Image 1 (cartoon, rainbow, N blue to C red):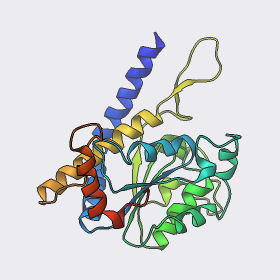
Image 2 (image 1 turned 135 degrees about the vertical axis):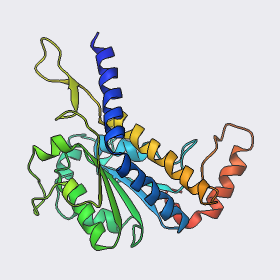
Image 3 (image 1 turned 60 degrees about the horizontal axis):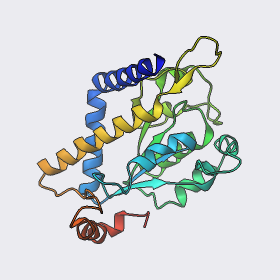
Image 4 (image 1 turned 90 degrees about the vertical axis):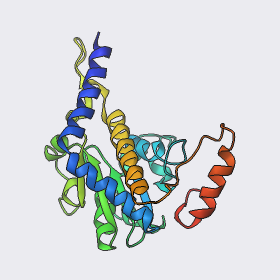
Length: 245
């Protein structure tokens, strides 16, 4: 069945991404560890479904407490009509406003997820971030992005304006499965691959922090005995680096 084929494709994408970009992942995990050690701030952003990665890695069991999502109401999946998210992602000037209003400042780290990497807002955010001395990492699909034109006035796509580029090694258009009798492909891979990559990078960052003698601010489940007290201590120690409370 094609469901099994899809699982195989997702696993293959994860394996390809990880095995072909070892040095890149090591740089990103080292950068995250460095920023936390220096008490700088870490942010994750994406529009529409790309924003699921930001939801995945903040305020959750086994996650770093200092990962801050950037949520803009017009890009969330509860936006109605949902088609507005596609229109807003192309609006010039909006990325600059979002960046300026979310506590991101020089010395911080901004991770941007955009599969096509062509739309105005994520490209603009990366450009403005670099101007402000903010480190930028993007998770994108290089094959896909190289095959489309930019919608940003600069003509640049996301991978062309970020400090570090991660390729999710997915299909053009994101969907991976072609079924007989259906013109469109089905089964997007970017969320499954992206969350696996980002969680793996965070694990390596935590390992680096431990090696440097730092106690990483990792959440415990609030449903385990002692979890609430443990998390409260983290909130207090890192209150200047947490912006989602």
